[in-house]
Image 1 (tube, one colour):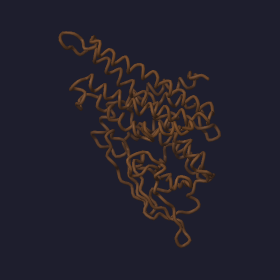
Image 2 (cartoon, helix red, strand yellow):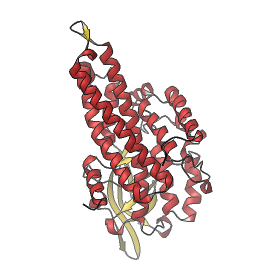
Image 3 (cartoon, one colour):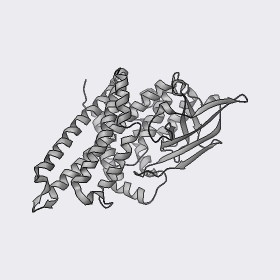
Image 4 (cartoon, helix red, strand yellow):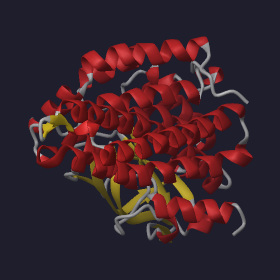
Length: 374
């Protein structure tokens, strides 16, 4: 088992670092927030990412992908976290195409995969519901037959990149009989409502009011739940990698501040109590990095028996550390840590959203224990 990047993956990481630091950095995120950009990202910058091949980076060669592996994609997401870059890469390069490859019909793949790769269309996953937490087992969206036709009704919350999406992959329960449907955003009965989130990203509430379904809309996987679980784990690993980059940036900025801030005529970084706190956070970051790399490596190695456990482990650590380290960073900065003029606040808010996206620490600890047979 190796967690080292290949030469191709290193090139992908280096190009991401160079590009994002110039074109999609913290300053751009602040601008997107202040201008209240509805889609939550810069369309021109996203098109540049498309031209660099990022939407097909992890897809297999038979689907015109680069097959760069998730270790390489994880390095991109780590850079995204460090730069606080706003873009729809998770939904358009991981969730939507991976679901279509696993569960889509031949016609659906032909229609959508090329369009996603070219950045011409966007597809969002509509999964979570109104509980405010990632709890697929409590899904209430249902498909019912009436007058010889199938109709879908339900309300989906926290739909990532839902505003401006051309179609939605909709999960309908109950979970044991899960079905997936590819529904155009302009279908009758579909309404999309932008949701204001603290990280200013593109999030939507989507209502499906008695939407008429046909056989062409159904994703073909049997069982659909297996396909969904596999794709969600890949998305969770990428989110954990983003959290790793974001938390390392918060930590580095905090340590730099401790070396600059003077109290009682000395740098506060010289206080042993604060050094101990920073040292503990450093150790936790190193442990967290090992979890993230292990999850990404397991995906690339095709060890599906390990992927679910390792991805839940990585996401649980990400969620817990997103809360702990960001809280510590604000405290170590003092009063200035809660002001908008300091970029730390933007990182803090993104950390809070990452903490809960696709399952918080409690969800993944429970899932990990279940997978382990407890």
